Amino acid sequence: METQKSATFRVDGYEALVTGGASGIGEASAWELARAGARVWIGDIRLEAAQRVAAAMVAEGLQAEAIAMDVSDGESVRAAAARVGILDILVNNAGIGHVGSIAETEEEDFDRLMLVNVRSVYLVTRALLPRLLQSPHKGCIVNIGSVAGMIGIRQRFAYCTSKGAVLAMTRQLAVEYPRQLRVNAICPGTVETPFVEGYLEKYHAHEKEKVREELRARQPMGRLGTPADVAAMVRYLASPEAGFLTGSCLTIDGGWTAA
Image (tube, rainbow, N blue to C red; front, side, top):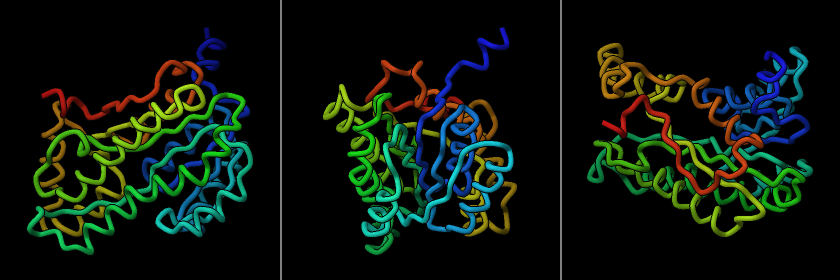
């Protein structure tokens, strides 16, 4: 039985690239794919952080390499893509957040969200598309969306807008390349990451634990998600067992969107 378990959701010999792979959900996804047998490119604007993650993975006998990538800059993305050969798995994870209603969202705030959260998915996917189409395993794209792209959340005008666009791109790509690629999105609820810690520090430094408890409470399971929760779904979506799954936007939110 142990042999059967270890062979589940394997991606042995696959080549993967994870954007924003130096921390949070991206880092957890890189580890998960590497432990499942993939060779992983860890793309991040913070090259030294990506190198530390890659070195830790190599020290455990896994296959990983850091690659500098500013997903908001086409030249940086194309330079990174030039280093990658055939690609089997692309995880579009890099993103930023913003707090504010439409009245509180300045033009530069909105443009920044669209640049990093939306245009980046276009830039990275377009640059790596030829590599994905060459995959002998059928290329797989996993976009990290958010429940914010599916429902309205107060004080998240720009963020909801950007994540809604990511889900739309996911569906469009799936129908554009139905036989060549599988394209899916994961929509997490609130996950305990440096991303969330930064939000708490910036907007609620004087009441972090109170607001953290409120974030837990809005998810019926009564806890925040973990990067490992999301990474496990990334691994499944990238694996042969998910071979009939494309164009889906899958929630992993502790029951938030079901309530």
